[in-house]
Amino acid sequence: MAYTIVTDICEGVAECVPACPVACIHPGGGANAKGTPWFWIDFDVCIDCGVCLEVCPVAGAILPEERPALQKSASR
Ligand code: SF4
Ligand code: SF4
Image (tube, rainbow, N blue to C red; front, side, top):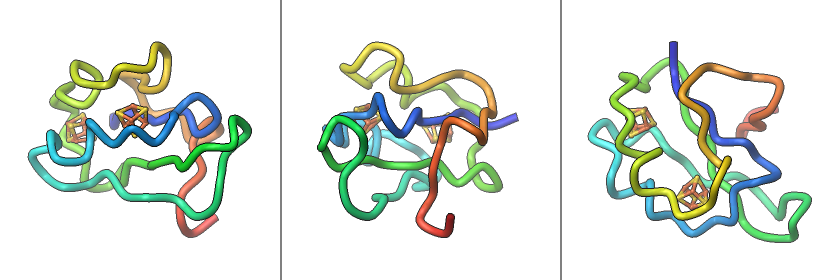
């Protein structure tokens, strides 16, 4: 089970990116529904540590479970 960044709630602040111990948080392309940059978690690499959720300043942007329907990635 991986963590999920909810694409349309993320505001692209990127506090989570340097905090992730396995560097599995990547920038998405373009803008989300809020008109901001957004990031996504590689589910296959995430080790479920929870650090990203602790540092994210945007309520609801990260969920402690794998929810592929809520997270776009660079490849889809
Ligand atoms: S998930 Fe949170 S910390 Fe990471 S880029 Fe989005 S808003 Fe910023
Ligand atoms: S739960 Fe941990 S490993 Fe997974 S994306 Fe967040 S910081 Fe990275």
